[in-house]
Image 1 (cartoon, rainbow, N blue to C red):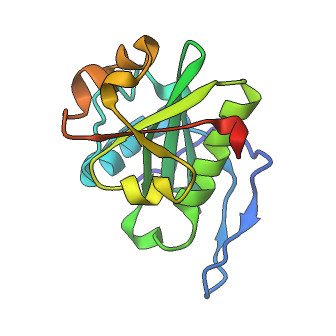
Image 2: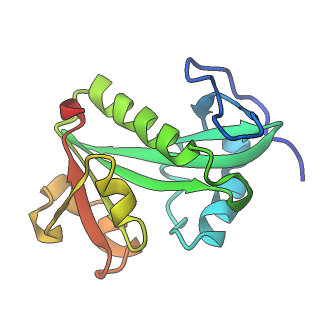
Length: 169
């Protein structure tokens, strides 16, 4: 598979704490030519990918030697944002990449002065609750969030809705 091209380094470089000491790359904006690989990674992990092309600017990624190993998005909607599709390739799990991506996206929300960050999940509610998110009734989400494709059509009604104040962390 071809390597993605065109991404520039950012400030989020870190050495992974995995026992083998693998180096992880910086978190970067997802290059357009990596969109098909993002869609494959999301679909393979049971996450919706139908609107990734239209939300490409919201997605960030971590690469290992050109391989897409983790991704996540922050879709802004007025004064609010939707944390979406935080995913790590199965071979790279348990190395702190999801936590790193989540904190990076929450930092972006703080920088943008987002009032609240919402997310929908069927499988990771406990994980996000450990990171400061609280369960809320899906119907209580603001209209801007409820109008996103994730809320309207892509995530099932059974998905748990969570919310956090990015400024509280």
